[in-house]
Image (cartoon, rainbow, N blue to C red):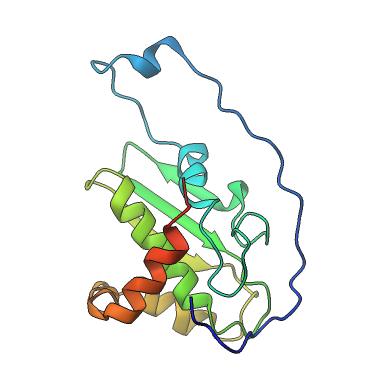
Length: 158
């Protein structure tokens, strides 16, 4: 990913618990509308790679199932994430990776809000503003270098 100087050289790494989603008979019936829930959204973002380390957002506890709210009926998703350090300069990039993963995976009807969890970043208001401004996100995704980094972070995301 060509990030040469690491902001957090030794992040705390957490053990990932094995997760299996309970399957229902209707899951395989294309005629049944399957609502999107927080568990499904978490499964989409948990394996995104951190831009600095060969670790996932789940392993670093940047993402957490309990910090995802989905209202399928209102077509709204709210994700709050926690940077590994309060001055993390990668917070905006991490949020952009989450946004792109969901743009590519969720039905278009969903409005997605992505935020840094309150009190976890020294510039949380600025990061939140950037992550939820459509024009800034579109401009970021027009930058080929930045898009390459995002795609690398998403490369092994399942």
